[in-house]
Amino acid sequence: MAKPAKPSGPSQRQLRVGELIRHALADMLSRGDIHDDVLAKHVVTVPEVRLSPDLKLATAYIMPLGGQDVAPVLKALDGHKRYIRGEIAHRVNLKYAPDIRFRADESFAEAERIDALLDSEQVRRDTLRQPLKIDQDDDRDDDR
Image 1 (cartoon, rainbow, N blue to C red):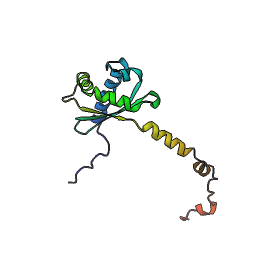
Image 2 (cartoon, rainbow, N blue to C red):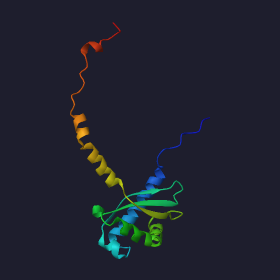
Image 3 (cartoon, rainbow, N blue to C red):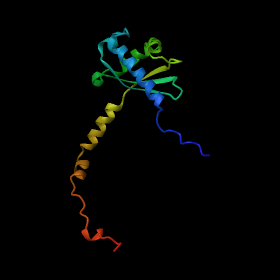
Image 4 (cartoon, one colour):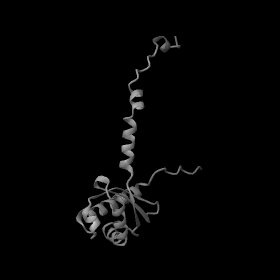
């Protein structure tokens, strides 16, 4: 019997736990539970949290509102990593609290790049071309 195909994306459990951690982290940041001057000055969004298959490593993608001062915000979060992990362990009922690493969210920059590509002159020229006309004689039924 052949082995089942390995799933290409994250499992349902990884997605569910990632969302629970994302909500807990966003709640901590919005309520000001993390006492830091840099974090107090910024509104920080957490668009996504990805987990490793064994649920022991969580990568939280972070973006300050407006995309300004990403490096200081990431440094501040890294400095409070131990506290954040403990709080997430209390808020999310897991056997093991995952290690958390923080990364800058690049999805907004990627969306802007795609918008710029779609707005380029070459793409605009290609979308304005006339559609191909199909000759009516070529669509004859050969079953006659």
